[in-house]
Image 1 (cartoon, rainbow over the protein chains, first blue to last red):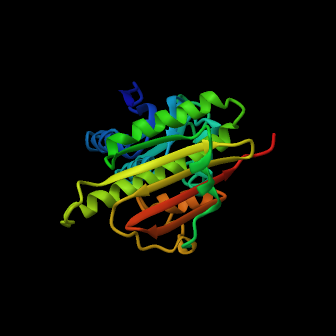
Image 2: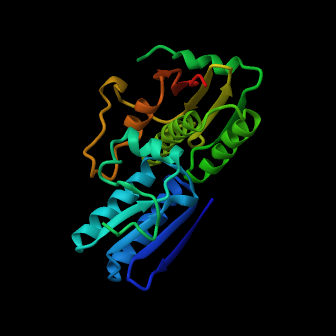
Length: 111
Length: 156
């Protein structure tokens, strides 16, 4: 099971926090949430992975989909607080180069 | 890859866990729960071994489930829906899983599985499992797809 916390900060950055496992079932929901945010004009998004205990290729696909739509709209998607275990999945796919993990949610758009 | 892989030994492990269930996406949570039990019972397994094994099991199961749904449009006489069986187990040196399903044959050559473009949104599952595991074997036998997954535990 998974819950998603979604909020938009004062600086306009959207923060999405998947709490639990990002698998085939929950990735569909994440994809919808990211797509809705971008459609609504929130094109800078941080996915806070601090509460994400599991990630598979469906979850990666949803993140890449969000990244592409955010960039097409002139923004970006960044990931933060990735656990070492979940980081393994990014490394195995070389996606750590495209989605560089940031240490904190607050500082994810500092550079 | 048509021979049973070394991980097939899991079906004879005394401490193995097994499940037989319909091949639906919602059943994934039950398999995650089985793995959770394995981790709680074996706290000495490293985080990295846990994630690469769990992710691979879920990728293969995802493949089985997606294949099952794709095959639902085909009438197979005498077949009462798509099901799968999974057996998982741990030894001092290995994490092993065996999956079987009654879906249509999977046509694939695991030696040719490549990671797609970094910006691709799908097609990464089997490549990810292949990269994460120490051995992944697939065979078609007696009308079933059989998968054997092996992860050698990292020495501390």
